[in-house]
Image: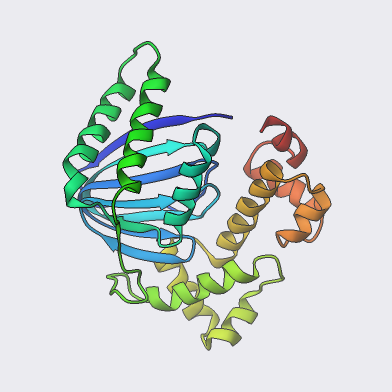
Length: 264
């Protein structure tokens, strides 16, 4: 399903997403003002104003922090050219970038105008918004964007986040295999209480909830973008069977895996 929107949000108080999530479109997150802690898949950043974060489809992510203003461009890959998709996937490897000062004013103006158009009922709005998006991507691709250091080389205000990132990295590499709390406790030399407390403090969900969401996100991606059987998708994503994948899908998505694939 094709989809594009400019989404503007301004918060005057602290705000944290309740839990990590994913979706079927690119999220181009432009922080206009304030500071945020941003988690994308297995990286965490502390970002300030005039920063872009690229979240590809089906990547787990969340943000938290103090007062801020941001404008998102949410767009499905089918509306973009091959070059633009390749460019965004290349950016996603580092995820967070400072916007070049040379083009900053123009990029911000386009974002503000796109958000204004989004809020108004005008003819051919989708075409106008897509044109703005393509112009912004052209401006970004014509400059050298400076990557923002991830938590591995930058400090975070969230206690225990460095250990949690190691756990997240392990989960991202092994989500298609059995994962238990005992395995994680043994691997990271933590008690069950300490492990669960540290993870919940940073991610705002339990470890096994995160594992389930990660597997579900990967299953959605395979169902949408491949012709693999439901059984193979289930096994590739760490579910014990196609029936169990179906139960989780029905509960979380409201569709069976097959109907989800057909709808896409």
